[in-house]
Amino acid sequence: MSETDNDPDEHFRLRTELFANYVTREGATLLPGCFGGEGGQDRLAYLQRGEHVILLLGLKLMHGEEGIQLDTNSLGSHLQLSPPWIEALVTHLRNSSATEAIAAAIAHASSIGQLTTAVMLLDLETQKLRLLPVNAAA
Image (cartoon, rainbow, N blue to C red; front, side):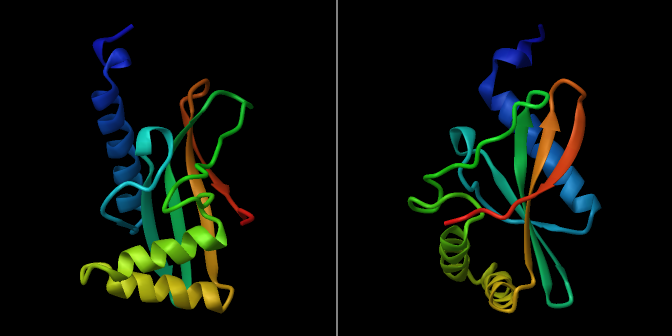
């Protein structure tokens, strides 16, 4: 067992770094801040292709076939990636001039059915990254 196994700050830093490296390599923008999850550590990335927008939440940890859990108290009392959560996210992003355009793109994509949401997972058993499309109900 390494020293970092019991250091939550180092664990968070490594998860964030892995997520940031992946989304940057894919051409996505890592949004500032954290968006719920275990210890409030989930990050969010935004990728736009024309009018189509992809929101990628991560990095969540998974143990084999155990599955994952979306936070139910993120951005208010909303389930992560659900329509009310997306609305709260847009409102949150509109509060900063640095993310106003991203908020508008997300709102537009959502209104025309061109918003895709997904979760990035790290399977702790296989040490592989997986992307899981998510259609979260309200």
